[in-house]
Image (cartoon, rainbow, N blue to C red; front, side):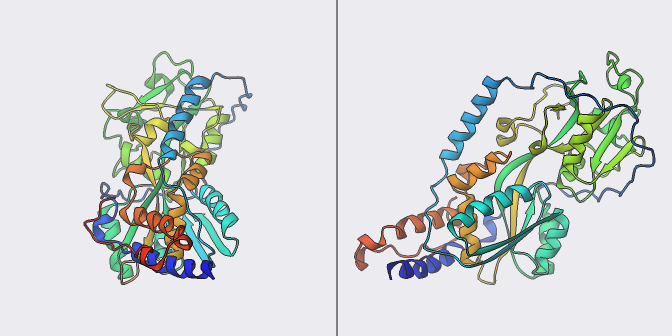
Length: 400
């Protein structure tokens, strides 16, 4: 009987905790760029032989990796514990980012270990298509692994006639990869523009060969082979916004790949390759380059630490976007799933799957209240009615 009372009470509390003001949505991102043309490879894949998998020294020593893991673990420990509730029934549909889909599956499986009666339908297909499905009511969450522009947010709210909420659940990054045997270790925004853009607005001349990029390169006059995932990929959009806003990709030695992971595979295989992939898909035979956003003054290597702190220029948020009801709420089940993700347990799953945690100091106020409500309800059987906590109110002045 107590469990039934707890479940009913928690649903009421979570509804109260889910009231979300528009002022609590994520900050506005820079203006979105036009979509990239769907360019297919006109030339055959390079015929150079596959490079054998040699034993290579990783970018970071084992000691450094252990230090980074320890730093991330300390951050994860700052998240609230997830306090389970008696039960949940229902379904949750999530569409969107290809790179986020495996991580969301891992998180949903962890949630299912507590609540086996919740059915999940998680699919990729790209962030743009998922946002349209969200407008049409075909999914509960759109997973978006990039910043959204103010114009994009406004259009979704106009089309759906409802407010939306962006919830950051982790952080990732787009990375520029080369083959592990390529001696290059760093690159500037301007050089990336000269390599990838057909109009190369940041350089006087396009950059076609490795010798033009680095006169000392052992690859010499060999042309640079470009590998990029298609325009629906948030990884590609993040790169375009950074290195070639409002520009299109060159058609010279340009190869369109089906996903960011296949871009990394190409960089593992071909010595002249350079490509744009996700930090999550890094491999020993592909090397992520340090990037400069200040014309070569400083270069930042993508690591868990630099991505978490946003020091790395191509860092990006991993977001769940949802449409709110007329009262400004998420349903109790959706809210509790987000509460699970933004807990120590959920963030550990996200980090284990290759991403970095979000900042526990920036948790949305409604999630903080939901955690507090669940923790308070855990003590209900040992309290009298006069001591039982009341449902928290939600106002736009609540601090995160």
